[in-house]
Length: 109
Image 1 (tube, helix red, strand yellow):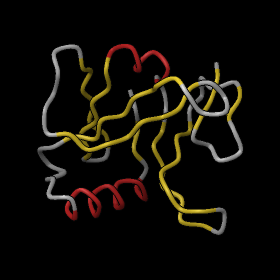
Image 2: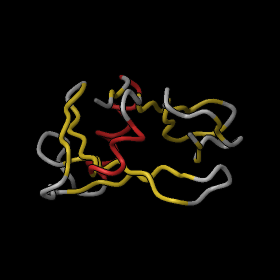
Image 3: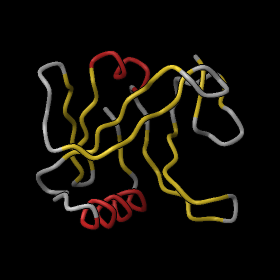
Image 4: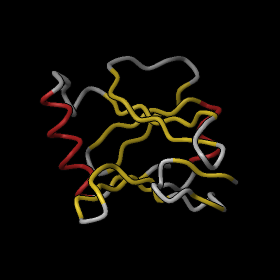
């Protein structure tokens, strides 16, 4: 399961609407790919279609899809949004990550 904080939900709704997506029917696709300074990096985009091997979750009114491979790295993760002095953007609070880089965009297990 992937959770979505209230601040992340507000930003997701805003951005999806701006990009022509409907947060009640469309998805946030969250994934993990090789790269970044810590070895693995997060990938987040909006999507209208679900693939056969996707896992689907809904939290806080937001629909999330994750491919089967990425799911193993993301179990228990909370998607948050930071608008503070250290920069703005989505933040992944991943309990599985042993190490993250300074910018928080990559991690290792």
